Image 1 (cartoon, rainbow, N blue to C red):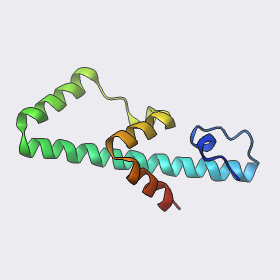
Image 2 (image 1 turned 60 degrees about the horizontal axis):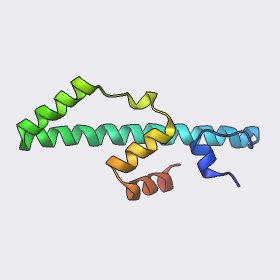
Image 3 (image 1 turned 90 degrees about the vertical axis):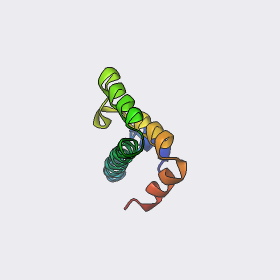
Image 4 (image 1 turned 45 degrees about the vertical axis):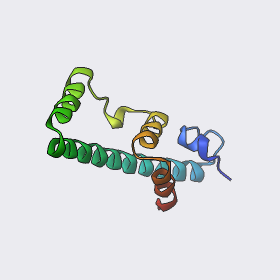
Length: 101
């Protein structure tokens, strides 16, 4: 049986070639889905702020320009997972993993 946490941390040293390929495909698919979900979540959040509170929207945009945003594609898997859990939640993360094919 494959160690799920090792796979998420990109440690495939104990896996054979077939398992390694499966683990890499799984993590890449998970990564792409998390990036999509986070982008959608953040976009919807900005739109909500724009519609409901222009000042809050401007503050959010200001924070982006002043502090910058590290691209999701450049984040390591652990940071991406932590951000996903913080912004979208544990329940959705578990559901995401359960529904990956």
